[in-house]
Length: 289
Image 1 (cartoon, rainbow, N blue to C red):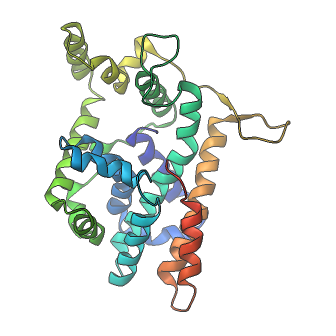
Image 2: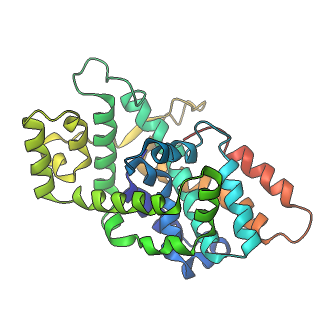
């Protein structure tokens, strides 16, 4: 899946787009919650406790109905008439959409995430991360977690209360995850931190080889460029076998719009269409990302 900084770049791109202005206009008053939503599915991977870390897998649709938590967030936002939660949900949609398009492509290029990269001593995790860092370096010129994320905005979200009730995990642990995510993402932009990581690897610290490609400085000597065009294994059109990076982002934008429309419809519906909106969302979010 793309780096969090790439998720921020994509979310800002959606926010700045002239398309679906009615849907995105309310987000302008709660940008911090929107940006929190676009990275929060990855936030819990940074928590030292396995129980909390496992939340990120669930928020990517693994282990339970993919749309279950998302729809619970929607219902909470509607019940409380919360613009902050509306913006957070739109951010969550942007995260899901980018992962849905890019994660299969990166798996196609590197293989399934947990397994060794065939024929090479370096792991698949290493190659995933190297491609993701190169992609971010290529498209993103100014969207960074440590500059754009305001962790204090968590307190304005009913979604966090709901998540705590649903999981039995204290809300303070959510903040811990975001703080670690913000701090570590900042370190990945620093050359001194990269040098320190390389020294740890040379000293024999286990797992450091898979940490190095998270640093932007690693690209200077170990770059694995994200390809200009990717073969579309799912395409049935013989005249369109390759997708460019621009194509992939456009597809992610189209998917985000397809989910945000029924989400917006549900939140603003005052009649009898709620269930039809929810059914459409469940269908779109089927499967994990």
